[in-house]
Image 1 (cartoon, rainbow, N blue to C red):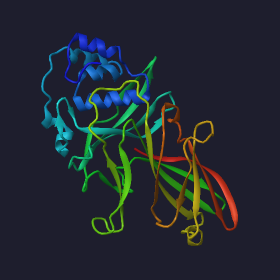
Image 2: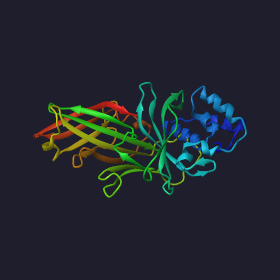
Image 3: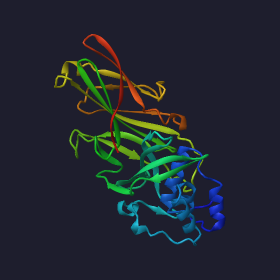
Image 4: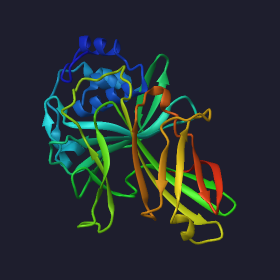
Amino acid sequence: MPGGTDRGALALAQAQLNRPTTVAGALDTYAKAILCDSPVYFSMVLPEPARELAWQTGLAPYQEVELEDSPFWTLGFHWHRPAWQAEWSVMNLLPDGAGGYTGTLFFSPLSEDNTYGIVYQQVAVRPDGDFWTVEPLGELEALRLPDEGAIPAPDDHIPHITYAAETVDLRLEVDLTYFLTCSDIWVGYMSLSDGGWAGGRTFRIGGGDRPSPVPAPHAAFTSCCKRSELRVERKSGGVPYDFLSTLAVLCVPLSSDGSPAFDSFVLTAYDLPGVSGLWHAAADDSGLEGLSALSLDFVYGNQRYTCTAYPAEVTP
């Protein structure tokens, strides 16, 4: 595998022998190409004709990266030649109906860095014969945060899918966000009741140890972190407070064939209007379609309900 500063015909030939064979490997290769600003790495993973342009650029000798032109520079990410020091994860990687996936690629600072922001980009991951490609669907965006690795939650900057289900009396909505990653990135919540957004919560993204700048084109996803938020209202209008005092909804993520995709989880109503949960599960390419629907199970009015919540809205 060529290094992040390697250029020339030999490096490009080595790169073509290591094109990504998994979805996770394609995202890792694309992320490392961005962090190293490496046309050689881009030539491994971009679709045509962008791959040909990357190839031509990779024939030229290596030149030092123009750091000031990068959104990572804007946010104060650390540069350690040959790469920006960041960890990547992908949010809401969903089937596109044509054999590929779309999602939001996030870059977060390493845990030891005092960096207050994230960089993100909408991407499409598509099959290309025996390989996978990644195509950017927008520009790299920089988001400055008020606290290290923190995003106010719920927030428009957190991509999520809204799943909706109805009974005779109630409408339930679950906002679901999930991260896939190949490393030890962590995601969690922090109370801000003592300052900042009083009584609010923050969705925190933290990077792990210094990652290798070299792509892993055959990687599998190693972890899956999910965030969820529940809203319940009467179909006739208003919030059913009698129900919410005892509400506990068992949620089971379903794959496209209706089988359970990940571990079940329980949403409660103690902190409405924003109830949030987080759980972890192993993940690989076979689990990418795990958010086709949610099975909801709960008791209301001495009656047990089991219903299926389907995607109603996607916030990119």
